[in-house]
View 1 (cartoon, rainbow, N blue to C red):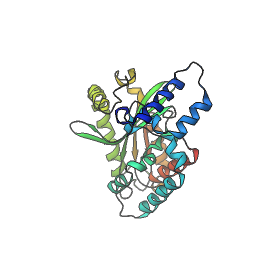
View 2 (spheres, rainbow, N blue to C red; view 1 turned 90 degrees about the vertical axis):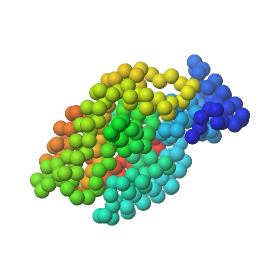
View 3 (cartoon, rainbow, N blue to C red; view 1 turned 135 degrees about the horizontal axis):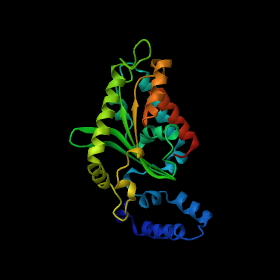
Length: 261
């Protein structure tokens, strides 16, 4: 979106000014706030993955538009014939914050820096619906997300997992097994999106399974019983998130109201 080579002369001059401010031993906070508020593309240009940067500016300055997207998704989900493919098609470029909202309450990373990738390939057989890369004080972490059906076979009568949830969890098992054997392929694919001026930190080169979290979104709140939530808590010990679409909507609202990832 904002590659340095594609900036105008004026934008490049602003970027130089921005880098001068941020490289100072004592950052002028007022000058930093002013230049980034007036030139939000600087965040993208200075990031590791300019086209995939999760931008707080969009949340803060497009509240009404983003809130409208959330309300549209609510109506879409209420349609009992709605499929996960329709949801994925809806959450397109300007609505990716909805998928990224999973970071807010379910993880402890992403508040220092974050990126989202649609339909990220794990070749030759797998594709995750979303890959989110987020940073905390311990470095960068990775979240792979699978959207499953909103309706039908979510749970059975006692709250145990139904076909839909089991399908999503089986997919995660496949991803985990793939990642254990193919992290360098994952790393190479990610670097295709990298800012050419930047060198990625060690987390992108050295495999550490504890930096990976996996998520399945399936069903509605009404499908989740006491037994379901107990099993959800058990999954969390394995760095697996299982949640429903109502919670996704709530997290998107929470994210939007907070104004930052």
